[in-house]
Image (cartoon, helix red, strand yellow):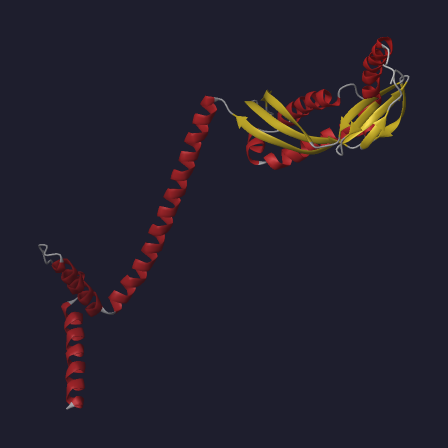
Length: 271
């Protein structure tokens, strides 16, 4: 068996060294969530992938576009609200590429463009809102920012799925003022509840007073029951003239006589 000349081996090695990098660039593997924009001599010829894609060396150029959901972390923006309050607001934007051709042809760097657009729209929307709306109507502001951005980025082949305001930072002096306001509001509600309780109690006591006026013995029995409750605690009892004593003695005597007669009649009937 004849040996292969050394010059032949060297030539083969040289050819492999030259053509393997070219072949590697000509064969591209596009993932399931990616698309390959193919430019032939600088001219767009189509979208390829996923799977194995062959490119003409030195003629075709492939640009990979990710179709997955992307996120942009919007840094804190100092904004003056419509009622002249300075707040620091940051947010997160979720978007994805729905048309790879437009995303490559219409805008140079769509990720950077979306990030700057998010900052601008966030400042505009917060600047047109009052502080109370920023604090309490955050969901509405999120939807408004998302709609504005989606309308602008639609010609770029990009769909803004969601915008979320992460936090709203207020000046320290404003936080203290809001805390005092909240405390005053709680105190006002407590006083209103206390006044309502007093009014209800006064109304019930008024009804009870009418009953006691019609039945003075019931008032005396209630007074004695109070003394019994106090005696259970082994406290000193100071007995004074009851309210019933302010009534005429005749009415008290008649009431006691009627009660005694009723008890006597009941006992006689039982025997």
